[in-house]
Image (cartoon, rainbow, N blue to C red; front, side, top):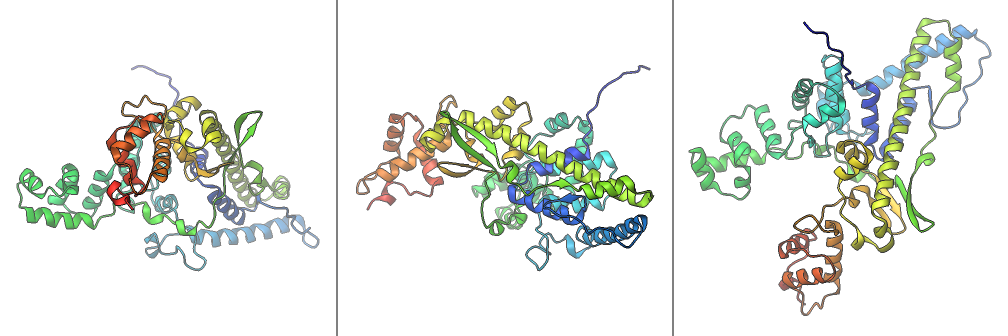
Length: 452
């Protein structure tokens, strides 16, 4: 027997809340705070002062307010209560009085009904917060376990729970696993399962004969399996996308020139004011009723936790924005053709955080500068050159290619080879195949299709 002392980092509810708020857009954060202010009387978004107590003794007034607050809580809890009809993720979206549904809310409501134990529940919720917009978990489980300090075995258990939730396929690492999870959910164990596991690329190329030969089945059976696979959802999180509800873009970051250098600042104080009510602090301090104190203490802890998480969000967002401003000075001076390669992994190393933190920070965040408003992920791209050693990023290469195509003689359009040579002459040496790839991504036809 040996006694070993060690330190273990545990993922707290406050850290989970920080992760959730970090990936919110400005509009989502504003909506979240307004909803919180309706549910939590301690949160104040605007100047307000409760009416003074004139008739009732202080303790009776406290109990009366407590009953009112509890009634208000029961009304709010209605929206967090899930019955069988509400398990449809689109049941209330767009309906009168319905809440805007998100993937993480939908998953959280399912977890609320499960008795997982505190540590496992927190681990599952953390993984849910790490999902991308498609519902995939792109980061290796080992890295996330190292980031949280949780045992790898617990994170594996958490992933299994996450992948058991609706929508089927959520929490997958890639398309193959996503489709596999959906097939297993419906009890499919035939050729379709074998195809998504090992022959998905061949199926995309319609190599039916090769697949049939490898699996020892007929080509007709391969086609039948294909029909089953086509019924699956390759992006389980996409059902929660609501781009039509975003009426405007609210920039989170502003980049301005100061003394010859471009610097970044966040929206900060322009956010709806959030402060903790002094009135309810006073009620808590003077109340002798246990129920009143317990209720208001819980609401106060919740408000303080959100306030801390918002501070963390602002700090991390500002550091990422400052890194972008430092590395992309030429972009802000000369435009998209001067955008240099920049990876999330490099920024994460520079800031001393995990790459997933950078990914969540820039999710649905926008940067405003003199050249317009850009999504923050616009500034991240790999080198456009084959050896990845160049100083021209893929975004800049596309911008340069678009300029060349816009200026070409439409009666004698440039071939991909000629475009390749022009790109090299402008300091962006990329292959003809890459030129063709970028051209197709911009939905621009070949030379013969552009000739007028």
